Picture 1 (cartoon, rainbow, N blue to C red):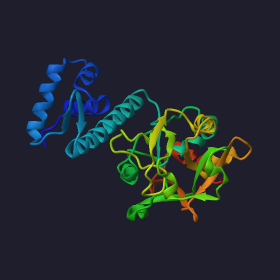
Picture 2: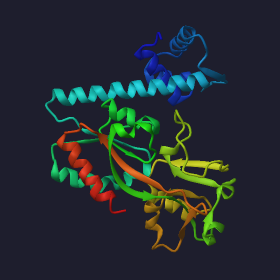
Picture 3: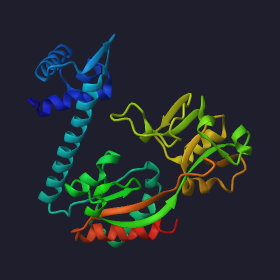
Picture 4: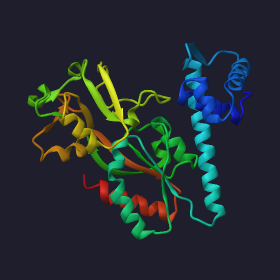
Length: 299
């Protein structure tokens, strides 16, 4: 495939900004020049990547696949460059982590604080990795620690430490109709206004799965760049709904303005694991995993 780094950066900019004008501004090139680059790329690939809707460029199936590839390739190149800079400066390579659930990072501040006490010269870096690429990223040394709940056939190729079991809870205001329910079902999500962290933004490529029952037809989705504490306050003040792991929803127990409700008559339980490579010997990685097990194993 005749694609270079400049092509990947072009695709990334168009996927992020949506128009040639905005992408050109981001890349510090003229709009006509960027338009010609896109046309040449599509010509080399043999098919269009975007549907033109006025001034907006919307990725089609081929475009979405190329955006996914561009994001993975550029992310890995940037990660490698950071690693080389750190190695060149004589610093230890950071512990690279990722999770299949954004809510998992709620434990991060305490673990990081204890990690800094134990290893003041080591760093931790959160990587962006697709859920279905976690194991590949571990095996290819693009990741050191993965928090996973979705297991696949390759799990025998990594080391797994069981952490805890959880399930999802819907959190609503005390005046919401769901507040008096024992549980909610997929049909109850029809036409609701969902409020979730921006890690669930459906404009991402690929779109992340939402923490709602399969087949749910929600009416509106708002994603906000904040943690669940602020989202709970937004829910308490209106008629919207949020969904979060039960262990995160525990913080609502002492409040009288919000309520956590089970999702499903028999909630689907997930078992979380901390995954590393079998041959992992790095002291910072081993220390970080030990602290995660101590913290998360208490759930």
